[in-house]
Amino acid sequence: MSAILYVLAAEPLGQALLKNNNIHGIKIPFSVKESKYFAHADDTALTVADKNLVTEAFKIFDLYSQASGEKINREKSEILCLGSKISEKELEQFGIKPCENVTKLLGIYIGKDKQLCESLNWDEKIKKIKNNFIFNFGSKKELTLPGRATVFSTLTNNKLSTEEKGKMSKRSRDPAINKLREVKAEAESLGVPESIINGMQAVDDLAKAREDYCDNKTSTPSESMAALIKDTLEHPWQNVYEEGKTTWNISPRMMSGNLEGYVLKFLVSASKSKNVLEVGMFTGCSALGMAEVMPDDGKVVTCELDPYLVDLARKFMDRSPHGKKVEILTGPAIESLNGLAKKNEKFDFIFIDADKAGYCDYFNNGHMYASVFINVYQFKYFTSYLHLCTITLVTILLPYHSSNNSRTFDYILRYASQELLAPGGTIAMDNALFGGKPYMEDRPPNEGVTKFNNMIVTRKDIYYVLMPVRDGIMLIRRKEDMNGTV
Image (cartoon, rainbow, N blue to C red; front, side):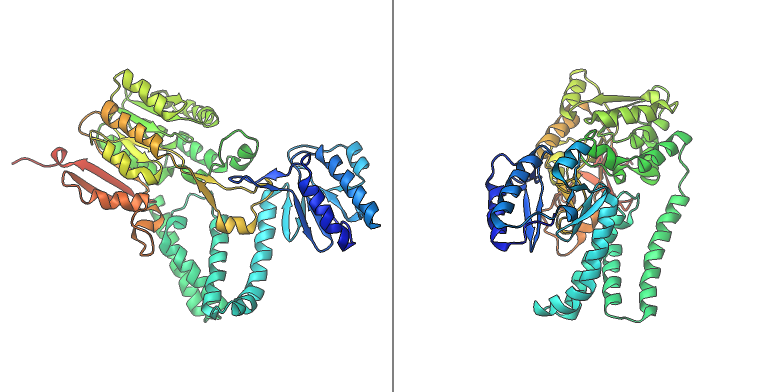
């Protein structure tokens, strides 16, 4: 909003808006602070929690306009309403035109089209960084040219990672590929010969070709499974989250997919499991896959907290003749497991894919009686507090918020290991490679997955193998269940 030009009126205007207890700004997630008033030069912006508060704000605008002798330039001002609509009568009252889609606020694009805002913000930020930051700002901060290029390549790589969010790909989890892209971006900024740049790209392409080759040499999914995978990838998760139908912003990358799904199917089939427990169903890809290789009297009991996902997955199950083997328990996992334990239920197969910080607790609380499949969502993607766009700086510094459910899963594993598991099974831990963190030199040794992996190799009563499938699956069995006899 183009506001008061008279500089002596701008400061008291801002203070009047900030100190007015009747005007509430937009609360910033994970903070007690509110976003309410921005001012830069002769531009003033006000963000309020409710459109009804705009009238209160205009009373202050009018008062300070009279005091300063200047007027608000209503022709150049805009009002952007999100989450509700503003009527023609209200617009006429304010005398300000509506912002239809996207506008620029203090150098950042905001609006109703989140994808467009993200694209515009990234394009502008990268353009500015490439010239001004690398060659001007960086020198003032006593950064070497390679250092400046590294900062730029990191930001560029973050953009690439953001653009790939939602794709079923192992590459974004592979630190070798991410490092290659950083080096490639740095080389491009330093004017390295094109042949070297092309060689780096060829390595990236080879990694993609290897991944595609493995996918192509894996059995194709059933018709029902193929439809489930396709619908999960194409589902409007962002819209579902913004409409409040899910409790967090879900990414389709949480789905096991066809390749990892077949690994699970092989494990279930080879162990001749007839009873499988899954905690955390998502859209049912793994549950349906395991049910497809089980006998007619086999059963997959899967626990899911989110009612929206329960309804969606049930629709997928009903399309398959094997869906009848899948029983979905809705609600907190602890309550579901407690109920199963009281019924003296026993399960053959369990796979752990939960809060990584609690891996050691989960394993130590287990008695290695069987294998369990726990598939719970660790990450809640951080979205803009305005629900407009992912602001570039926030995207770089805060890509996600991780919830700490260690105590919850301590209880889950206690129920599973002591009450629910049949003897003679296999424990499988997902994300054992965890994006390369366990074997990267600059990572602390006490991180959840790293600490767990280090703990496992000290155990004398088990055998273990880490398979580089997607983000790593570690299989663990008691020695007494594997040692042969002579």
